[in-house]
Image (tube, rainbow, N blue to C red; front, top):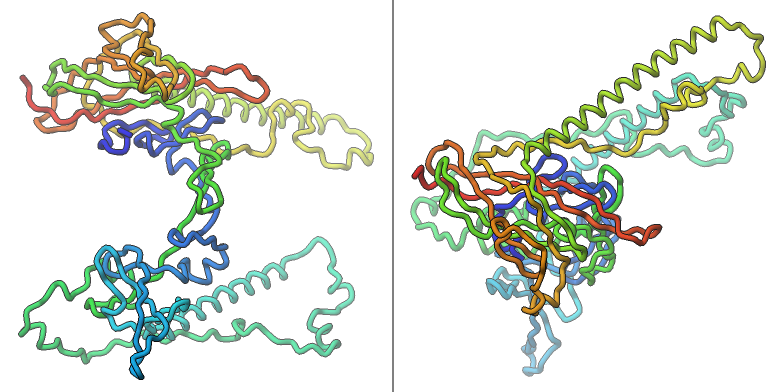
Length: 514
């Protein structure tokens, strides 16, 4: 798990131009492109509580303000609170009464008894909550904005009614309106309470010139920081924002979300979890480190300006098929992509110009040929039905195509890339513990391939840092071309496709020039 414990020094270029580690990228099997979090659509599948694992519908979550009614978190350290039971003896005769429970944090040892909250009987999970002093004002503001929304909707409906219609409605024919029908049936016409002639204005905040003086305790007594709440403790309760520790109340736990990710280009899912909150499995799991070879920095010599430094990279094949990797310069990949995009735009512009000329010719031809009007000639002719425009395929626009964009990262070193390619065997979990399974005869160049084991290979490269100041970061880039193998339901034979992925490496800082 080197991509989790190690720092982010190896980045892959997404199709949108952003640099991300391989653990934060997705691979679309239909587009055959890398996608980051900005290149996919996020869709909410389910809402659930992370502690009690109860599912909630979107309506229930909105009514409860996306919080669980049964679970609480500590207002001091934001960890989960647990219940502890105890017995209380009655004052009369010393007999034991029913058991009671209280909340305690197993991390910072905060309890509900510290702030004076009484213990609750077993089975009653309704803990007291503090009343917000600004509740009435907030309710008035919400009602005002609801009235504004309804008023705007009513104005929009009235404008739509005033527009000229191409057909006559039943009301216009008979003159009977909905108000007349209600009056004839004896139903009172009750207007919407929010739709009034005048919307109630919210009470504005009134400034006061008389401000209370600071208490003398702030100037005479020493400040005890342990009794004052931190910024996080105040923001977790925005309605109260307590200033002292004695006013911290338990906070209801917010609901968690299970979301599915969909590619913006082809609209296929790249990640879809199970609906059950108890399960951590995925129905669709197209993470990049399952399909794209992983690059790790093995060792690098001290970097000196305009001096050759040895760089050892380890390549790992995560798939169950053998792949061939070839390293290419980064500028060739970018140049080829932009030439392809330019050709596509030129072709699209030519087709638009040709379509305009064809339409003009058709109009001129129809004017010259005067024929008697028939039922067929009166019908409007669609553009797609014309023989000259049928080849242009004027149809509904397909899903968005993401054009390749260059990366903004500055390359500060040259990389000497070998011309030969190397092979990575498929992944075999059992071979990790078998030393006799490393007998491969791939006829590698010993100057390039240093070491092999199972599905891993270590490659030697040369880096030459450019002229820069001492202590600046050295960044190199190359394009990794690998063979992606997949199978389909129609054709069971594996299909091999060469793919190219730009890779950026942060090798460290320059130590000197000699």
